Length: 329
Length: 258
Image (cartoon, rainbow over all chains, first blue to last red):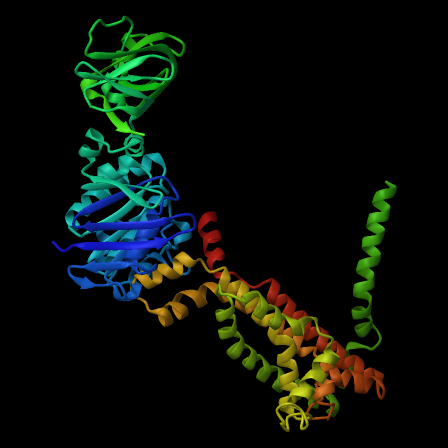
């Protein structure tokens, strides 16, 4: 499979965006808004300057219309004065794509008459009708409501697998990135902090930003070595332990699904224990996210019920020292 | 209570003040006589000159003004200064505009031409005062076109020219049409710059507004008839401007109500 390669520095309003990246399958860039994610796509598309090569061909000086790209804009940028079929026909033969994306029945509708999910399909069909060699997706799921989103995410992931095109997508949502991409890069203030498979990012985040973007708890503290384990003293004096080696100011990274809750204090030196009152409970599917002091735990609905959890009830949150990653701050 | 009387009273006086002169044009002479006066040779000559010069000026304004607006809708240094220069004729006294045209294109002017007192001089005078109205509206219309939609067209394989005619122009269309109608209405009524730069030669440079002025001294009823014609033309343009059906929204409304 061919590779799209980016290597550029682009001055933005408050920082420089610097990136060297090779896209062979699907790469997702995640990061907070204003991190320069969309600018990366604009460079790849030729809407902003920067060195781009595709399969050894130098695209750097080619205008957008002479690069073989399919670009799906965040707001879809459909042509409001054309109907769905004419929007797709603008780029190429429309009917096969309308059929494949299940929007053939909307051919005569105007973009203003469509729902968010339908517009997204039209934008995809239009981008693909050009028969592009590279696909660029800007926040492909962010304009959708929660219900539509999970459905479209599944379809999009299937479609990307079938298309087998080098695909670069940007999103502020780590879960979307992990669901759609083979590799996820975390972009903060114009710099790529870490690029790895989603599982690797979760297992060994390089820094606090990466950890917080992958949905982890981050406990700030001061690390020192104590016979075998590293002790991290939190601001309130409580200590947690990790098998990672570190010294000085660190963030202890713990994933919510690695935290268990109990009514009693478990006596096990390999376990970190934080005691506190439940400050919030939120159901996510058949699981419950429970906030205890500085940490969020994710437990099954059944165990939340067994523990009789309610806001204000005292509880012990425990997590293993082996599951606690330390990142420099 | 008193406050309401004062407010409504003022509104009534204001409306009456604006409407009365227009009504008076039609009230003084019977409509049949007004129509009969339109057959008068001076009136038909002036109508012909007005239609010819307005059409030529409008074509000039659209052909030169549209590319001008495209350039001025971009962001660059000194853009504000250039836009202000384009807008200057709007606030110039018409007599000053006429004198300026004379100083530029007169036989002893900067460019030494023989344009003054010809039909082309009328076209220049009309274009000079009406053009800025169109260019201003067109700049706003092009600025309102979503930059992402234009970028999308480029990423879909359309070069700058195809993008302009297939995307930018259709999306700016309503704003361009409004600007064109406004410019046409202003051009039809042009008086000051025309009389200074083109004079008032019957059948050559005497437009409808100039005919109103010259007939005013000779035959008041003919002046009224020409005025009535101008009121009707202006009103028609105003109506076209306000009740212009909007393509994109009308279909949406239809769909939403069904």
